[in-house]
Length: 220
Image (tube, rainbow, N blue to C red):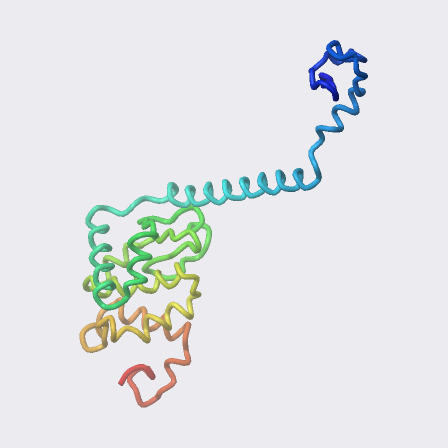
């Protein structure tokens, strides 16, 4: 460690006892090093910054792994998704449409995380809070048109907001009339029947009106 003269600020060799310029006495090497020791607050701040950088790097790596471990949508399926999002926008669900259009990353196969757990339903799955949405083949096979696919994507958009299964199913079922998804036009579709059954399983309180078809209290 070099020694800096406290009087003239000249840097001297570590072995020097007096300054070669002004002959002032030089501090011991241990004293010089002590003067440069970082303060406790600086040490804490540096460790906090390192911790934050490590956490951010871990999250980014986790997010990237979810994307690269699954296949992207085929071109035709991607166009169908875009059309379904446009339906949501036109029906007054602009916020949800923006989430799906701007933030969501769509995949056609399970990423490594989805593959390790049971599927939430036959149509889609969302990894919260990473907004990675897996769209299974059933979504394209058993829906009759863009509007039905929009209903399923609306469910996934609620998951992107942090809603659980109960909240997502309840929101879509209560707002299906605004979407234009009704029993008159879609009551015989596979998607309608399956989602109605799943909604009843997750929100049984909506299906206690015995005078209505299927006990559905939201039917007028």
